[in-house]
Length: 159
Image 1 (tube, one colour):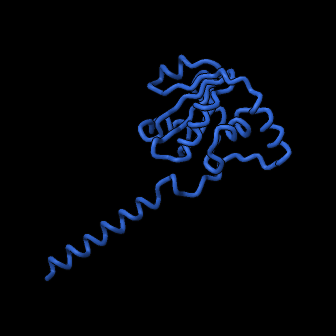
Image 2 (cartoon, rainbow, N blue to C red):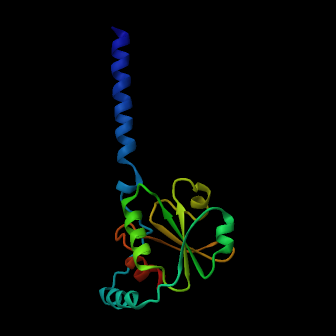
Image 3 (cartoon, rainbow, N blue to C red):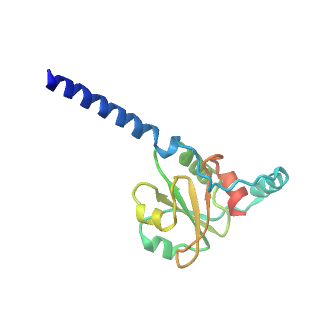
């Protein structure tokens, strides 16, 4: 009888822990307070008009290793992307459809497999964009979680 009870209790504990892990995935969590949102409606409208007229001849490349950062040109922006993240896929669809603004190289970094790079730049959530200098130091960060589209990234961060 004690073995049956132990098995039932163990099963319940495993089930509860599984539910907790699923419910705390970053994709379903609350966006961090580090998200930078432009609160001025007038500025958003003016900037939105600018995003439509930008020359889109920048580059969008995948991160492979440190040499990717060394060889990138222009304003370097890391895009921490996870294939399971619907917001990331939405932003990426805009990047692919509309192109990257001239003078920028956006480097797609796999959120799950590049933990050291995430740690270096203080990234805690996918959909984070990090502008870096030529020595690969963080200049600024932006989280595109609440409005996951590339025009919002351009309007609120790249301009």
